[in-house]
Amino acid sequence: MRLADAGQAARRARDLLRADTIIVADSGNWQIGVPAVTASLRGLVDATVEVRVLDHGLHSGTFGGPALDALTLLARLIATFHDDDGKVAVAGLPAADNPGAGISEEQFRADSRMRPGARLAGSGSIASRLWTQPALSVIGLDAPVVAVASNTLLPAASAKVSLRIAPGTDPARAMEALRRHVQANAPFGAGISFTPGAMTATFAADISADAARSALWVMKQAWGVDPVAAGVGGSIPVVSEFAGRFPQAQVLITDAEDPDSRAPEPNESIHVGDFRNAILAEALLWARINNPARRQTRAGRQPTAPGAGPSPHQAGPRSTGPAPG
Image (cartoon, rainbow, N blue to C red; front, side):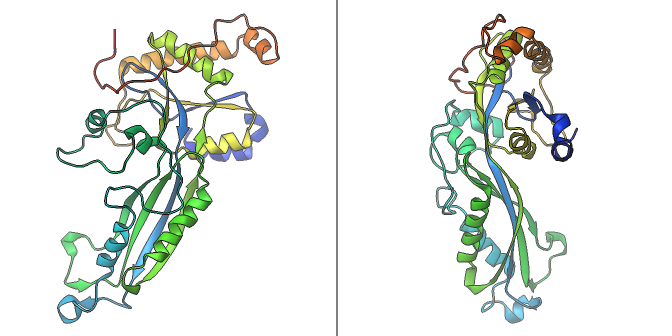
């Protein structure tokens, strides 16, 4: 089932979908050979920004100089989204710098395939920049393509902006903060149009809850190593949909991906050994959740099943090498 379809199903068939545990397979492992349960998700807001400076296109030789084209002005507006260190400069967006597990700069560069010499943006730990601080990207642009460009001052240009927000941030307030920033930084008095887009809430899991502890326990049995509870910088709309409509349920987020899976590219892949372990862990989890002794535990009786599982360990730097064993 696609995530969008799952969200619609949650709205239309709430009673049929009511559950104690909801598993969303749309995240990933800490590294090849080390499984993970997602502890938090950033939220997401996006918007389309249009800069308009002319009623129609003009010849750049005849009018260029006193009049700047819309694409140049849009570029100046986009440049205000970050400070000189690459940190998001939109006021009113919360951030934190204590996400837990560590990621080294070297490992981030290896996972992301950054070009040699390219400087990392922002400040604080790499993990906090990925999980608990906002991140802003321009993901689309409406302007003539280079192959058909002419010597014309463009009257208007548009960009789609994607803003990841830290856990605990209200998406509506983040959208308003972005709108205020855009309106306040209109370059050279150009007309600005701000069209709000999608909003996805943040998520924070209760790793001490029964389902999460069970998931950590079965992962250790399947992989033979301590699992990690880690933040994820992405957003999953259906998670907030399920969490809001089924507040009694425990939402588990995991998957068989690793840092080099390259989702959502056409050549996305998963490690075969981790996939095998994930299948085993899922089977163990269902058996553990459906164990009558576990159901008695939820009713307040002493458990007779194996221990509740390991606490997630403080992970060291990632590695994309072969799985252990």
